[in-house]
Amino acid sequence: MKSSKGFLIIIISICFLSNIFIVSGLKSEPLGEFDTPPTIDGIFSNGEWKISQIFIENNTMMNDLLTVETYAYFVNDQENLYVMVDATGDPTDDAGDECLLRFHNEGVTRDIEIIGASGAEKNTNFIAKVGYGQSPNNPNDHKIYEFCIPLAYLNTGVVDFIDFCSPAVGKKIASMPYDSSTGRDNEWPPELDVENMNTWDEVEISEKPSPVGGELVTKTTMMLPLAILFIAFTLLKTSKNKNLEFLS
Picture (cartoon, rainbow, N blue to C red):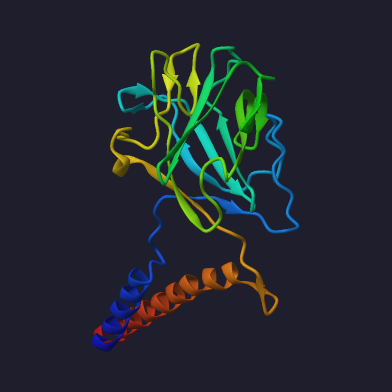
């Protein structure tokens, strides 16, 4: 039994040392050469945005601000970073609603911002569109924001990490997002201090692995922690059965 426990400790240590269970920061989902990038139209189409990286609960306090329930998604190809802010907690389509994303990389800071009711759009340095409708996260109509930002404009590229936050700035609150009808607002990350880069989040911008032997590298790496967990569970179960046999 002691040897089983020792082996289990070694397995868990390997997991932590190899960062298998450690996830830090946000991860943009990379698109492959033949994948279709999101359409920036203010509509959350099924299958268009797959993995939510940020979830903010409705009507909670964050940095002394009352929040709006929101899901945020990040996707990238070789040229652009795509961002979806699904403001499920904002059921009103107000002209004063706003969404602000701030990125910083190697001395270059960019504010990616749009304001307005559904139909509002931007096409200067980046593309942005405001929508109002349903989404997989909420069947009721609510505010939706979509962005396509050239990586070159953000002074970054694939296989890179870029600092990210959504601050409340200036006389008018603007964040991810701001609901003008209620004054609710989402600063990100929690406990953000805009002047202190250590309090910012970061987004990993990577590229899709090339197929290896008919399998994607990501699938192989996903199987490793599952296999380790299965071995650990089996060892624990065996050890427990031995204890029961000994007691009987």
